Length: 279
Ligand SMILES: [Zn+2]
Image (tube, rainbow, N blue to C red; front, side, top):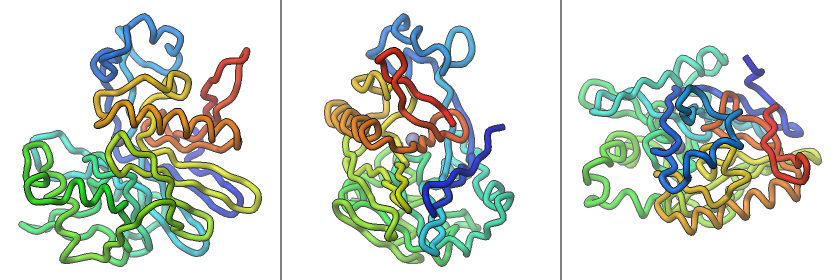
């Protein structure tokens, strides 16, 4: 297995796998013909090909703070098969839940806020009791109104997000907010209205945790490829194109939580064409 920890200046990032899933290319990317995937076969599995999807949380240590970026799919007993193991992965990394200072959700889809809470009897309590739970204000305002939170398919908002209002510290942020003096939120809307990436800059090195700006390395090259999950495909493609350009221009180290574990790599040029090079 690839080493699950990397370093950007004085910041360390550890990839913690919550779970893994997969799906047919043509199902997950309905607008992309099967033959167009041939150029990206190295990043597919199975035959006929499936897109592998890892569901990763990143444990980031920066400026004396322990930050958890996304919390996986969780393990609540709902209709979806939710088999996340983030708590075990944290234990294996030697981290207790009460050592997490900040929990940041790149967005509020089910595979990013699943372990924000843990079911205890009938209640859902914060998994990370001492953490400040940071959300982008637009994301919060999109998902938490009663009619949206209680709409079919959004049960995870009721289980994983709303209970925090009574039981945890919540911080809503706007724009390019600093999380620590080395971590800055980067609004990248489209996948969801308030989706954010996390820019990292420390001791002359730089990187970015991209959230769901890309679900597969092919999208780093084909920035117009839209997965089923993008709420606003045009806006998402624009955010993706802009972030990939920034990654290339600034030679950023990338952490991509849905790519093959641990999701660390760089965007390079091979024969003039962009290509994902995993670390
Ligand atoms: Zn996701």
